Length: 479
Image (cartoon, rainbow, N blue to C red; front, side, top):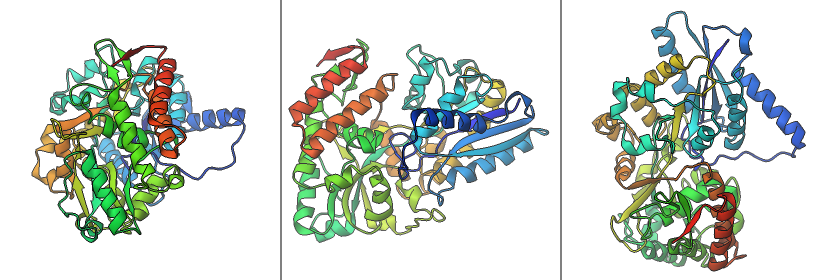
């Protein structure tokens, strides 16, 4: 049987679920046809089943839908060479799946259901890993981790992203990301704002956007991702960057109460965060609503608005420079001179003063894997200090190994890496329990309501609370 290892997407703006990548929509096939096609593709991606070469490791991964982005492809080609050299007689076959995020997840879960199609290694988004754990698709890695010296180099917050409620660890993180404020120094100069800008609170951000609107009227003052079309980008880059900076978010999760293991309703911080989003669009400080709700807007932000000097402030992630590197197809070598970076402040500047959200991907072994031992050996090779550092730099990712984070070569490899790595100390991970994807959708719906003006803040918050009760089987607590 062919040993199959499935790689997911790179952190290409968009490849963590918080980084949505969308392709043009084609006419919708019937549900039966979709299911048939997905199943067929999943099986094809996994190889030819029990008749396959036992010495061939088949690696299926998500290839970017942007033909010019080949970061994952090039990285895997290098690891393939290393693996085959270290394991004489073994071969690695790369089988890319070119698909948007949602389709990749669907295919992956199709593959995990059967021993005939289950890969030996999968690239799991921290957004969904607990869903697959709960479904019984993944194998706990603790027996491997206990014998792996390098595991001690991984930071605790990153380890926790792949830990289930049963206390066991089901994935090895291959990097993380952080989020902050990108701003155009040229636009700020025209507006009379400081080019070393660092807002102290939310009001400072809104005031800067208002000044840009008045003094530089031909640009979009600021961007906050919002609504269902943006998906998890709206939830993480937008809403949670606000919510976790409220009074509650500074000390505990403002979404999930760990003590009672229940989801939180009635939060003032939730309403305040919606109020910020409403203000951005009500005062026309953000993009036109039609643009904000365009599924491809994140691609336009990275590829057009920022490089062309048409966006003042952008609340976004650490991975953006990957799109501007040499060979990316969207080269912009001047970005570090044109753009400034500022941390996202807490709502009123209260301690700790700054906030970030982190996501990322983990390597996990399916419970039905035919060759879990070899799969973990592959993980160990990928996660040596040298290979991990190479991946973080190529992928504009943030190190989750302390030895890499402390290496001057890593910190100086690319402008912005040191800034975003420093934010790890003040970052938060989502409560990625099985209900979270539905909770996230409910947040997006609330955001969309205040973005379009169809709902007031109070109405959107009430709608969220009701939806939260529904998607969590009423496992809620009011705060």
